[in-house]
Structure formats: C-alpha cells, structure tokens
Image (cartoon, rainbow over all chains, first blue to last red; front, side, top):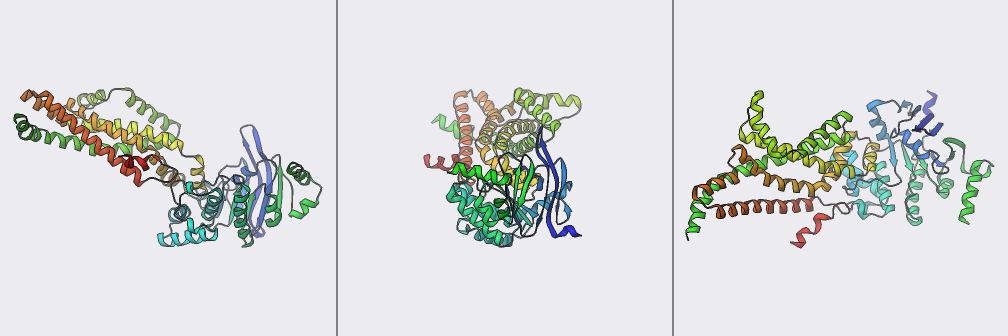
Length: 248
Length: 230
C-alpha cells in the first residue's frame, strides 16, 4: 500500500466542544523520522489536534492511521495504539507518588509486562538519555520543571513509540529550563525520532523541524519547511511579524 | 488493698473475654470497611450515573440514620424476612456498613483531589482506565485519605460498644456485668475507659507509622513530623 510510506496519517479531523468548533477539517501526513512543528495563535486547536491523534479527545469526524491501521474507532485496541504514540504534556503530569525511575518503568511493568529487572534497566537507560540518571530516586516534587519534563520525555521514550506528541512541552518553563528541554528534543529529532511538536519556540521550529504547520481558526493555513514559511508572504509571516514587534 | 484484689482477681479476668470480642469486631470490621470504602468511592466517581446515584443513596442513608437503628434492623428485624443472624455477625455487618460508608466519603474526596492529568498521562501510556485508577489515582488518593480513614477506625473502636445492645458481650458489656454484680461502677468503667483509650492510642501511633512509611516528598507532609513531636 502506498500509504505505508507515511507512519501517521491524519484525515479531515473535526472536533467541537459544545457549540465551539475547534477543528474544522485538518489533514496531514507524517513520514518516519520527521519532526513537525505546529505553530499558531492560542486557541486554534493545536493541542486538541494532538489529543485527537491518540484519542484522548475523540474526534467528531475524520480518521487517524498509524502504520496504515486505523486508530480512530479502534475500540479497546486504542490502548495498543497509545503504547506506540508517546505524549509529553505542558504540565509534565509525572505521577506524583512515584520516583523518577518508577515513573518511567511503571508502564513497562504494567502495560508491556516486562520483567522487573529488564524494565529497571530500560528505565535507567532512558533517564540517561535525557541526562536524568542521577535523579532516578527523586520524586516529582523534588525536580525543577525542566528536570520533570525531561523525565516525562524519558517516560514516553521508554515505550519505544513510533511517534511522540509534544503538547507545548516548554510553555510552563522559564527560558533557561526551556533550553535544557529543547536540547533533549533536538537530540531526539536528529536521532530520527518521529515528533509532532506544538510549540511557540520559533528557534526550535527553525532549527529542528523538517516541516512547520501554521494553524489558525481550526484549520491548517500554511505548511512547508521553516525557510519556505519565513520567506513566504502568507499569514505565518504576518503572525511572526506580530510576535517580533512585541519582543522589540 | 481491697481495690487491688478486685482489679487483679475479678475485673481483669472478667473483662479479658470482652476485650477479645471487641478486638475481634475491630480487626474483622476495619479491613473489610476499608475495602468497601474504596469500592463505593470508585463506583461513585467512575461508575455510570445510576450506579453512582445508588451508592450516593446508600451512603446518605447510612450517614443519616443512627447506627443503633441499623443494628436493631439487622438483628431484630431481619428474622421476620427469614434472615437470622447471630448477634456478633449482625454487629459486624452493621459496623462494616457504617465504616465503609464513611470511608468512602474520605476516599471519594481524595480521588477528586488527584489532578485529572494523572489519569490522562496514564491512559496516554496505554493503561486501561481501570489500570490508571488502580496504579496511579488510588495510591495518591489513599495517601491523602489516611487522616480521615484513621479517624474512622477510632470511631469504630468506640462504637463497637454498641454491639452490647445486641447482647454481644464485648468490653463495655463485660464491664456492665462486673459493675452490676459487684456494685463497682466507678472503678470498672474508669478501667474500661482506659482500655478504649489504650486501643485508640495504639491505633493513632500505628497510623503515624503508616503515614511515614508511605510519605512521598511534596505529596504528604502530615506524616513526616508527627513522630518528632512525640
């Protein structure tokens, strides 16, 4: 099937909350190893779009396909798909009662049914990948925001996902902590992880993304490489201009 | 001297059996009441509308009526519909229902206080909702519910004396019998009171130890310093 060149296909997703139509038909395809950044004003449905992909929000219409298999309407099989679709949240959502290493290993033990020794090894390896192995026994409340977010990235990585969804992973962090998280994400991107990133970090988008998708009013307005969008004369450039003005 | 002899030769032996019955009631009722509390709380929070309403109704009924009435119904009322329970079993069931109902309120509140994101993150990892509740939400909720739950055990220790009204000779009942026989109300009931106080004190200390064992930085501060104060 020709579709299989795409690891993830998203087709015509619609989602409303009550009378508010948040997504009005969003489609895009993702190739293995791509990093795609979703940029746009707040409230345009970027986070909802990510949540529709792993069915944390159930789309009203449209389909999501992972490796050619339908994720939408998959019934109880959704739990299998979610193992393959990692997610990193704006507010980390680390499990408060578990140490860093337990946060990473719990799904390995209880979802993948790995043997405890192998799970611990894997968890420590993933913590090492994000530079958090020295903090393995610490609890979420003892970590800085940047450290917590790195642990949550390790938690997603441990499941060996096909794709990771990042929902504004640095929006709750100050600039210094933002940098340490973005560095980990850049490393992942260059190692070939497939990533969908909702972000306001233009620096990250221009340096790490293969493609930038500009969303507004529940629709994709423009998409292309970062250079194409920056050099174009569409809404993206106008939006970026506005942000620039405020910064100066 | 006479008082000493009364204590050692009459009161201790006479009350010993009662203490054992009281302990049996508490040790059997508390764990079952704990599990029942968890089940009712989960059904109230995560059950469908009807199950949730039913649980709410049952808890409301138990909270809204005196425990002694429920004991009377269980022991004196049920035989009329063909269910005959021994006084001990009737008391036990009453205590479990009462303890479970109140426990469920503490646990339900604690479950609601666990941030929604915890459940979302667990589900995003591929856990079923059941797994997410059992592995992520409940362990956090129960830690927060410890102070409330321990209060309920303390209440249970004290209201276990109501079993005497169903003719179960537990600590209070045994005390009443000795007191009447020897006309020694003051000594006897002061002593009985001291035994309850001892049971409550042991429970309180045990709870502090449990709280400390399960303390997690940033989640449960309460358990950390209590022993230092003692």
